Image (cartoon, rainbow, N blue to C red):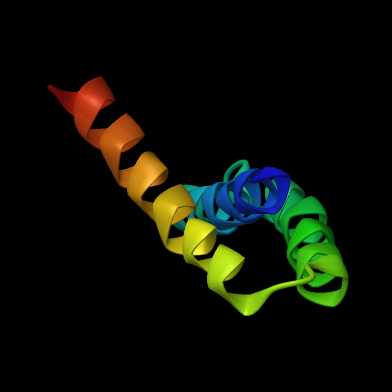
Amino acid sequence: MWWVLVWVVAGFLMSFSLITGFTIGLFLLPPAGAVLIWAACRAPHLPEAVGFVGGIGATVFLVVAINA
């Protein structure tokens, strides 16, 4: 269960850093990459990586909620 949350955080950070581009994204990209690499190396099971897609979905939801 906790590994899914780690993958969600990794997905959120990666997609948020890519969306924000050259503003805050440049500062978020190194920690996002570190979290992604750490999760990929430490996660015990592959199906938990579905949380990465959930993190991308959380980013999309956040952007839609802000723009609505």
